[in-house]
Length: 392
Image (cartoon, rainbow, N blue to C red; front, side):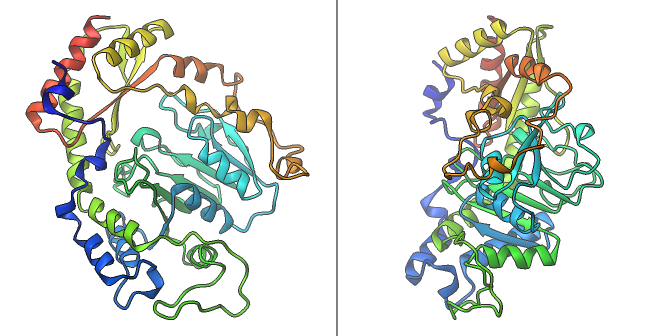
């Protein structure tokens, strides 16, 4: 009998397994108040409380709760006060939302090739680079470029991860973004956070996210003198309340992932054709990543794992230079904006046309870890994985 059937498990990632009505005191309070808009609560709003707790936990000076991580990326970019058509260098391997955030802000995404860990290769950046988005993919803490004025950390998959110096992922660059999407470390279905240490950037971000003005709780709406336009990215109280419940379990989830990772590493089969990719001490260990000898062996592993109901995924869908959003350069604007401003901006930066990266992606396989399992069940899961890989 497979592990999921024996334990009655559903394939829910990370924080989703910790959603519990009995643990939802913040959500009950928000509903009982009958006010789900953050700027009309009589006491401290759930959104403000969330922002304060996240700031304390991550060591961030300023935190802003928004609808999702894509909006957080857009806010971070807008706050740099760019010119339309400016290039933004992004990893060649990441979710398309990164490119979408750049384009919807009127800027041009330039995919930059990655290293062996699928982190942006900072050595390839041009010397005059102004804006870079660095993605901490799969919880792996990526290196940040030096001398770039605006480094935005996409930490959507790395909440709680840390750099070697102890600072949390998302807090070292100009701004950091986080996601509460269903498949992330913590979840509220959707939801996002934006953090920065820069007070001037913070003022722009919080105004733009609510129609161009900083709001006074309990006196909505108020307008800044000389207000500029903005959008509505304001989170709601019920979403912030769920995120507060999730945030209470962050350390527990990270510890469970760490324990499962250590157990799984002890059980990995001794095969020269299947190599586990190492994880650094500060990484959020949301998965085991394997580099297999060939695409054929990788596909065989996918089939065998799926047959045994062991969750797994590959990363080829994250190769942005081959994504239709970038290859077609289509636009909903009649004049092709912002692609019509892309003359002279390279389509990508790579030493070999991304050939090495394609080959690495073709041989890479990820298996999620399960923080909610007991140590005994994590050992069963690790043995099941080992036995499955040994049969290839």
